[in-house]
Length: 501
Ligand SMILES: [Zn+2]
Image 1 (tube, rainbow, N blue to C red):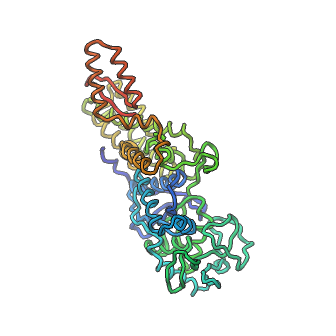
Image 2: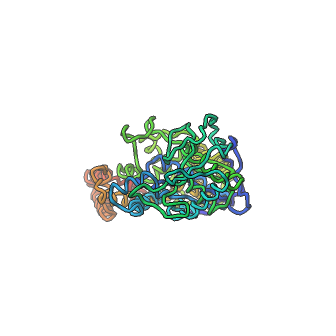
Image 3: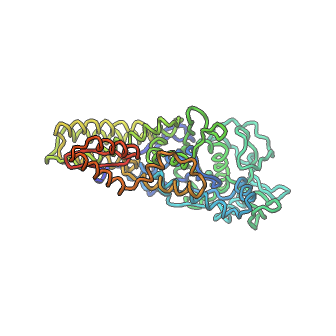
């Protein structure tokens, strides 16, 4: 694909939860934007709600890169917590072995969805000494105390600004009331666990502050500051992390540094599925793998999950997935047509202007708080205009270059035009086989996958021969047979082309 336009240095504005305003996102050190995004707790396969958050952060990351902003992006992997310890113990497995399978699956899923890998991946279990140091610093500052069982807690009363991110009224904080769960009920602020003393039989680390393991909140403060410094540019995560997790991260970090922990905070809203909260008991809970096995393409899932701007609730439906599938088909068909069209030299001023306008509107929509819905519209408008121009012989060679450049900058962020859908589907099927999930594979997908390129080529050749022999009934029969296998054939003056749906 052509190189994107020379994109002017552009400032991205993002809604900052902390200030309640659209703030410009610029690296304070003038070098690279230092961003930290909370990663997964690896105790299960990721669901589409998790992936919506990672995808929206990927859109931000890619757009920053497109506008010429360098990024230093850190994501943590929570590979020790209450659930992990409980589940691994039930399976009589060391926690590292238990989490490794889900961590591998998580990165595979991100790869399927086209999510770029952050510069730094930080595992909690590999940063225990840094967390212990931070707890010691908190204790020295009078913000942490140890209880009789050997656990350590953060003293909320030591941080009067607690609540400034979530804007919750926490005036009823009870001094000394404690909670030791990693997640606790909303609207209740209590002293929270920094370090949990080991109970008999539990995994523990032997450290200067005792035998035990870190709480969830301390890991993000410790690792964000270890890789990005005391004050970072942006901290991102799902909306459910705002309170208490992010509020606790601020309290832990700022009690020690007395500097703003992160200047900007981005929170991605959760999605609904068919208008309802996604839950296993409602039967509307989907992992990425569930959808791949139903025959949906990874690119369509990516586009559907970013189709609504990150601050709005997305109502995920199968109709929405079909709409995304069709939109991608339009993009790909147009891109192919444009590349293969036989064009006269020269430039058509009207089309040059249309390309410039589409590019400018696309960039402006994303720069304005990542409006992923608005950003799509000018691209599809341009496709309509260009298709008509090709039909009428008015699109010239230089117009092709200009329009391909617009498509390239669209794909630098959306990443759906280039077709990489075969691999995720194939690997999901291999996984289903191993995981005993074959009964969940859509029949259509099985038929489609069992048809090789050679099978298709042979049928296409047979059809061409049948047509030459004026056996149109057989030719139509073959066309229908291919359609059932998900193959579309197109007759053109250059011969017969086929593609998989
Ligand atoms: Zn976190």
